View 1 (cartoon, helix red, strand yellow):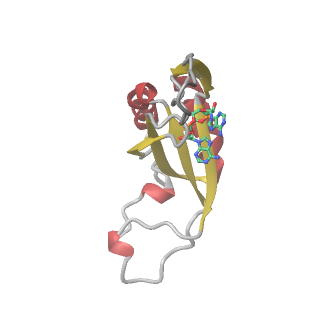
View 2 (tube, rainbow, N blue to C red; view 1 turned 135 degrees about the vertical axis):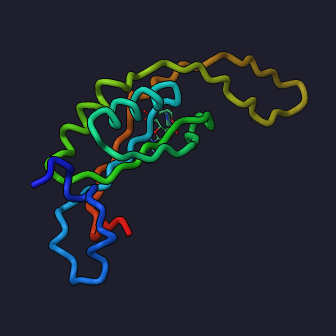
Length: 133
Ligand code: 2BA
């Protein structure tokens, strides 16, 4: 028995044989603030989770954020959620709205809008098959 999670085991030597029954795995996709991404990835690595950080940007604010993707066994999803909660905090961001198209003589007074951006937007997706080749 090994303490390493089954999904993380090196499967290269098993490639020629009918594979073992793969454990049920979820793909966790977390969209988070850029500033939290480093601490979250470190927190995940500390507990032996493998994760990928992608640079992304929000459709609404058009500001850069980070997307963390990781494959985890079903029973470890709650632990991953707890790590995300621990490292990701919501923030208020100020947005300057785009001025509308105006007719001559019209006047637009821009005022900044405050938007609450959540600590993390998380999708947990079932995975049909997961292998490291
Ligand atoms: P953004 O699209 O840049 O959105 C940033 C924040 O702006 C959102 O925070 C929300 O508070 C607000 N917002 C977004 N769309 C809005 C709208 N149509 N009207 C008014 N306010 C709006 P969160 O909801 O915490 O989302 C943070 C980021 O997570 C989003 O950045 C986006 O990148 C991602 N996200 C959120 N919901 C998503 C979804 N259903 N699918 C994919 N990505 C999502």
